[in-house]
Length: 151
Image 1 (cartoon, rainbow, N blue to C red):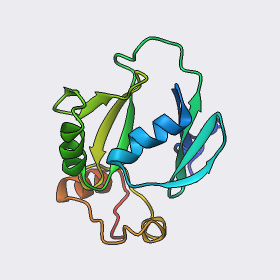
Image 2: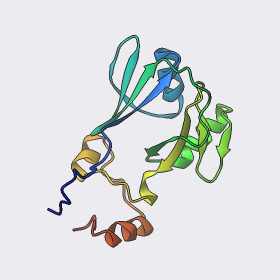
Image 3: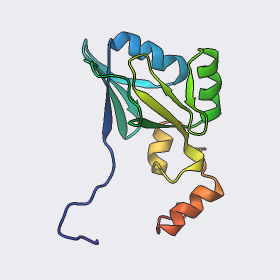
Image 4: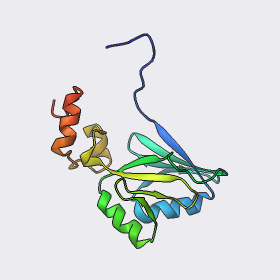
């Protein structure tokens, strides 16, 4: 194991987004995402994402985000686009499928198959996504870093 003496960043366990109301936030996100709720109380909710989670918490007081955003990986980006359009949610960056939730959090939707972000096979199986495959370009990015998903 390569180590420089400083701890290495491994990844994200979770991201927390501040919202106005937990039930309203779960209803909003539930309109375009199929998710399992890990747990919930009056001020927080935890949306399960396999070995990671999204925490929603009450208390948003700051202005709408501009450049700061949260990149959410999904199995079908175009399905999210269609649902958001049907919900009449304004898409603020067509290239990256960015939009604002009702509390001003900027969300970027990213398709799993075309990026180097990878879930372990056993995590995908546990999420019911075991048939999800990467594009050749995403596999090439991973191989370039010595992370060949095929071994």
